[in-house]
Image (cartoon, rainbow, N blue to C red):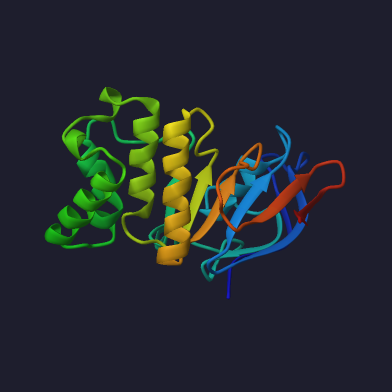
Amino acid sequence: MSIIKANNLTLGYQREEPVIIKANFEINHKDFVFISGPSGSGKSTLLSSFYGALTPMEGSLSVCDVSLTKHNQRSINRLRQRIGIVFQDYKLIEEWSIEKNIALPMIINGYKKDACETQTEKLLSHIGLLHKANKYPLELSGGEQQRVAMARAIAHRPTLILADEPTGNLDDFSSDMIWSLLKSANEQLDITIVVVTHRVPVRTNIAYRHLFIDRERNSIYEQH
């Protein structure tokens, strides 16, 4: 069962300068996929298209059975309820406590208050930040903020997690925790994971697929 399917997908911000050109690939349920490529190759552009922030110029793209070629805001909202996103700059709500930030996707998805509280406490404990539940994002280190962002992405048990350079600026301890969380989400919760990164990490102990963006050949191909 494919979670993401692209056929002749062309993406860009200006029609005369496409970034991704006629790409064909498929990501299946329970896959753990790294997408890499040199700077400027279109990694973040591709990731943006997966949650509907960028509409294809040509070709077709479907994510979680939602067509992103022909869509309306309702279908985009429905899609985003099934996705967890980990941004490179965290994108936590500064005015909200850590606890409330993690609960956000559960609130959006209509979880009951008791379920939100139980799941949030469990995740805070898992990322080693239960003692900081009432702190605010700017009171945490970068590594701690990314762990909170990771917990938020997992909280509502999405079908798909998209992560943009999730360990790019982190120390080894926080990096190891992020990879461990992603691996557990994939293996224990059957969540499909797609990670955009400059370089595939060497010590994650994860069974993965690797898609490489090659601008010179205008292609995305699988590396083995």
